[in-house]
Length: 495
Image 1 (cartoon, rainbow, N blue to C red):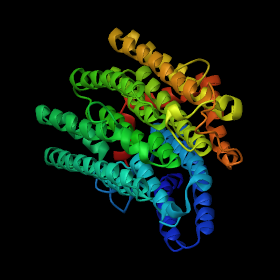
Image 2 (cartoon, helix red, strand yellow):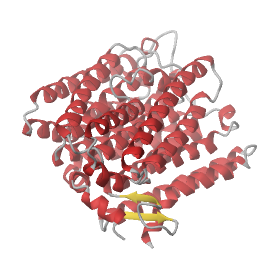
Image 3 (cartoon, rainbow, N blue to C red):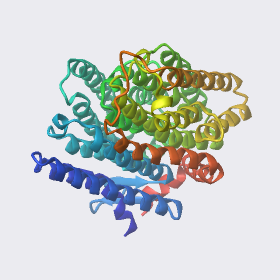
Image 4 (cartoon, helix red, strand yellow):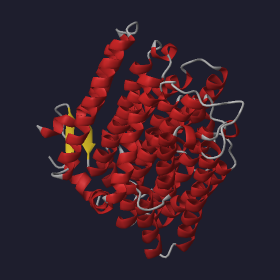
């Protein structure tokens, strides 16, 4: 009976989105319904996480058919962690929206498409079917495109067009890879695929399919060299939307990458995972160079999404239990901190009216709370102790040294220092120094209502750092399941 709960993270936002369409003229009612929905989603996600941590893998077979013929929803510890983070970021970013989104967007089905976006994200985390993963990717693509272009400004439409065209192209490759995989194995169930791929003789063709999946997920996750669409697309989005996109949307691609390369394509890690490791290094280094070259608050943060996802796939490339645990810990850290930084940028933009660094300054004197919130989140992203970024990076580097991968560890350390430099660059221009005479802060502009969601995320990054051993134990439990896929296979296929 407990397994039925895993369908609700998909059904709840879907139903909420449909209901909100009937109240498009009543924004207050939309806010009330959407707020209740995300609170319920957070409670559901925490319950699912509790069940996953204290019992077997949760499996729900939709329809009266045996596996692998039924549509399967599956949640292990890793999936439950991602659902919990999805609920958290949706909650804080939506409440941030209540005080920051303009009435024009609110009347254009903003809250309805927010819910449909969460349906796609959550669906990707619970599906046990590779084709349904494609379906949920398309749902979140459509809804994210609409959230991106609401407002109709020329730069939004231009960047939104690039965003949707590139993601549609990746969808075509995704569907082609699924078709070829089905022609080889005769199944779409992920657990059954893991069995059939291990037994299939056509390993060369399967490796080509695996790399196609990696390209598709890499484009959605912002990996080198498929990241070029991301910085400008996220830059034009409102801060609440950018927090959801930067925190969760790219992680759907990273989640899918980790899932298929720990469950299905594990027969030749010396080749596939070594490529992933190289890609992680290029992603980290080139992403942080892009951030260093920018002079806009949100563009710097957007480029750092790229550099930081490199750490996550570094753990997958190393492909050891400790490395996978470090990657999971880092995903948790990054989702919280990156979303927090985008929300802080939204508060700062509300006060100053701009995101251009050269037009800002002196906020440490005029708005010290905002300045210190950024400082905590910024140094956590860079990996300064005792915050969550330090411990998650430490685990990854320890795993790299244990495997003798000194090159990737060196790159990770250099990127951490460059990340710290870019965070201090923002602090120096925006919060330090003098107030620009031509752009003084707007006092009494209602920014205080935006601070509580930021405080929640700041408290969590401090908590993750101070309770690193507890979080690491959960990450290790998730890693143990991923590195032993027979747990997942037995849960799904054995009646």
